[in-house]
Image (cartoon, rainbow, N blue to C red; front, side, top):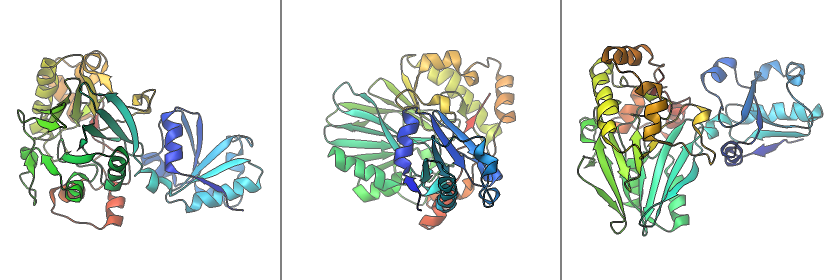
Length: 377
């Protein structure tokens, strides 16, 4: 018998709706330990596929025959086979995740953050498999996409559904953990691609400078995207204020952590910039701004509707990375708590500079694994 499949979109709906979900991950333990589905109310059991070939006794104590079990592997083949073993053993509601973790890594789940004051809307695209967050601003038939992932077809389908035209593609910084779709999307829709000039000194393509003081208007002056220079994660990192209400912080400030300054080998040089941005530049902004970061790290950061956001003033009360008054202690906290580098981060940076052009399959492989853009105090 062929076991039923569940799509990444169907699983994503369960996650963002905080439904109780049981996943049996049958990848090797080292792959599982490095990266797994751990969002919402998901319980994950890991039992490598080869341990189950001669019988499912090792997982029977963790599973009930009348509960839904979603089996996950790397690409969707092994999970189908394990699902058949469970089905033969009398488990009634077994599903195989279509495309496995490879497909999960690429799924984007759009969530409406809010309507905007002059009309239009702001959406957050949650990449649940990597913790990447991108944004879509639309007003009066025009749209801007910020920190787009490389799966450009998802944004293009979204604008077709909304009947708007993408005019602006913006990267808040040169990304190192995933391949940006901004430049490709700009080519596809004949839009303008923006990048901070201090992050673009080695790029091989033309771009429009994302600079403080140069507003980007979406629609008929209804929504203003106002850049704020905020270095620290990269030298050029630039935040955006949208509609005087929302602060898009890129990889500088997250909900439960802060950005890392070392992905260009500049931790000692850039940690001072990071502190300046977090402890001075952002401090001068309104506490009522809603922070919308470019990544998240923890399941708890997903809100009730699946969005990732927090009031800036609340983060100054709760985020441990914003609580270190002594500059020396801050420097020590950042440099001592750097996580492992993202997978293939140098090649990803070179791809985002236009210096490398890997084929689509290699691009997918380069991005496999979690984001590692944060420092956790």
